Image 1 (cartoon, one colour):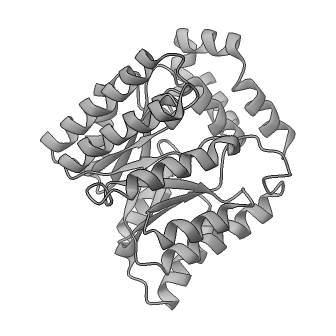
Image 2 (image 1 turned 30 degrees about the vertical axis):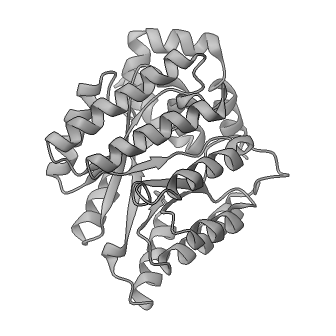
Length: 307
């Protein structure tokens, strides 16, 4: 792990810097590259714009580790509003949810109850919800909650989960998820993890990503492969062609504000592309993790800020 990545991940947990950035005009200017806006309306406008370009969306109302049950229900209410809007406008979009925002750190039963209620709403409007993965200490409880909700016959097609290729355990997790028919979004992982649980070298993370992607492509479910790495994307495309796997059987996912050129070129080639669109006032931790994932983003932001 590079020193810059380590620094940005450490800064993502700095409360004083977070308070300053989230309340300052400069902070809002900085985050606008990777965050669709502060209000729900901002994210919905971006959703319409992307849909008009032939690109699907998954919406993330930013916020993590709520401190009260009231906050957890308030966070869920934002998603309920989004689901109604998506249904009314027939948008090509669904939602991505973090369980700590639903109260996981307060009470796993609370988080599961709120998430199940959200899943029922998702089902009623014929949409889909992906449960984001957070730090490795939460991997097992997150998977347990998703598996229990997915096991309910009336909710089975409405929920999926994220798996991170930098964790050693991910191959075994994917084997279990595939056996149960749970849709997966595969990503590399954006949290600071010790070498006891995660591959420390990028080359090993990439190698595992491709291994897991191939497993997903050969399964009957529709999965999402989340990467901006052109070498990995090319390898995935080649594997799909060689195996006669229809491009519509899977989708590429990318982050809002990153590699827009690649998003559009893949869509033009006929591959389904979905952009992860985050929004909200609690944008700072997400923003810093994006800088940690690719420190070159910091140089890009600085260049544009001074320009």
